[in-house]
Image (cartoon, rainbow, N blue to C red; front, side, top):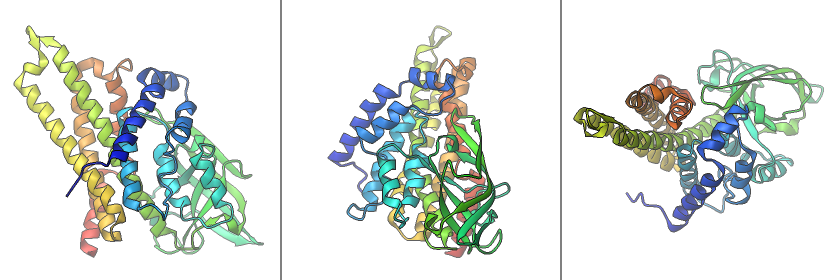
Length: 379
């Protein structure tokens, strides 16, 4: 199988690297974090205006899905290598995929605003006790007097404080645990009855809990078919896992490079640490974990255009591989740096935080391993 990139994809990577060097160096990262900002508006606008990559998650029937997915993989890998804190995964990939399925009259305007960097839609689905299982959602949406009424809570919605719109999953029929009955609704962030409780996350980003108190929505706010949102959510998760895996590859590459450079510079017993065979073996093990994650990322990306079972199994396998690698490479990078590996003054500690968050984002290794087992049984 040919894994080489096209000339256009190589140019995309080169242009993105130049953009990130200009707008996303470590100094700007520290300034944004210290100021309590979970994004840099100038970088977000550059992704929209200079590179035009905010719309990659929106499927265009004139362009093959595989090409779009591979371009997304390139973007996410470079964002991971640069430790970009911007919510590209949440907005452009997950929410972007779902908005591509919205057929409301308001859909084109919101999609155009996303591509231009003026709108930041975010998926809000997680609830207390859902444990990464979409079927366990219970927030009700009731049809009353020509409107949908949403009442309940969503928890740990990543990037929610930055959102202009929320794509909210709710039960229009049935109860928690049932596959049928979930629907999606597009809710502007300023909708009456919606309150947001924001907080920072361990990886220097942001999240929030959402409270819906009799939020009223027209039927035109419904995204997709009523009661049939489970398949959409699972497909969006596969796109998210493929993109997250690519970001993890970039993060782990940076961790390995920083560790190798440090071991070449740091001297002990009159010689560089890189001369010690036991540390060489450790870094080889880190490299092997990285390459296994890269292969799993490629597999998940290329399987997005496959049948549902293949797509789901590849995504679950990638997340298990990446989660284990993030823990191994992150912990060893910090250990080989010694005490300074936990200092905020050096990049490795920030990359370690992101690797730790990726380990559990979109499902932990244990949860995805269980899902892979279930998929294998149903095959």
